[in-house]
Image (cartoon, rainbow, N blue to C red; front, side, top):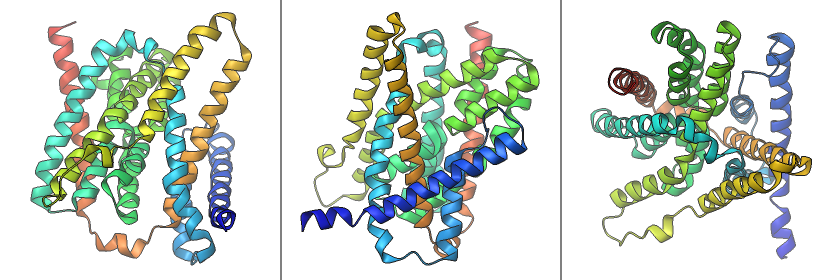
Length: 357
C-alpha cells in the first residue's frame, strides 16, 4: 500500500523530465544550430515553462499525472535549490564583494519599499507582488519558485510572476549590454556589476555577458557579471525566510506567528552544499582531482534538470484563462521593479565612481 502511494507520482515526474529533455533539445537547436552560439543564450527553463503552458492549455492533463506534477513542483524543486548551492564559491567573491554586496543590498531594499507602495496603489494580490519583487531582486525564476511554497502562493500567481520576470529579463538581457557599454564608457568592472545586479536570471546574466564579450571583446565583463550574479544568488538564503516572515505576519492576526513553522528548511541544505563545495575545493583542487571536478559538474547538471522539471510542471499546471482574469496590473509591477533595479544600480555605481574610486 505504501509503495503504491509512492509510485503514483512517477508518471508526472516522467512527464516533467520529458519536457525538460525536449526543451533542452529545442534550446540547443535554436541557440547553437540556428543562431551560431557556442552555448545557447536562451534559457532552457524559459522554454520549459512556455512549452508546459502551451501543452497544458491545449490538452487536458490526465489525473494520473497530477500528483507527480505536484510532487515535482514541491519536492524536486527543493532538491534543485539544494544542488544550486554547489556553484557558489564565496572565497572567490572577495575581489568584487566590497562593491557588489552593498550594491545588491541597496537594490533589494529599494525594490521592496517601492513594491510595498505599488501594492497599495494598484491593489494587486500580495503573494504575486512578493514573488515579482524577489524575482526582480535576487535570482529570477529560481527565487520565485523557491519562495512560492513558504507564502502559499497559488499556481497561477507563480506562473504569472515567472512570465513577468521572463519577459522583462529577456528585454534587459538584449538591451542592457549595449546600454551599459554606452553609459559606462566601456569600463569592464562597472558594466559587469551593472549586468550582474540589474538582470533577473543567472542564465540571462550569463547571456548578456556573453553578448557583450562577443560584441566588444571583453571576457572580463562576462566574469565580473557572473560573479556578481552568484553573490546576488546567495541572498536567497536570507530573503526566503525574510519574505516568509513578512508575508505570514501580515496574514495571521488571529494566531501566533512562528518562524519555525514556515522556515524553509531546504535552504539549510543549500547552505550545506555551499560549505561542501568550498571544503572540497580546498581539499581536492590543489591536487587537480578530476573526480571532484566531475562531481561538482554533475551536481550542477542535476540542479539544472531538477529546476527545469519544476518549471515544466508549473507550466503544465497553469490555466491561462485564470491568468487573464488577473489583468495588466501585475505586469506593471514587474516593469516598475525592473526599472527600479536598473535606476538604483546606476545611481549606486555613480556614487561609487564619484566618492570611493
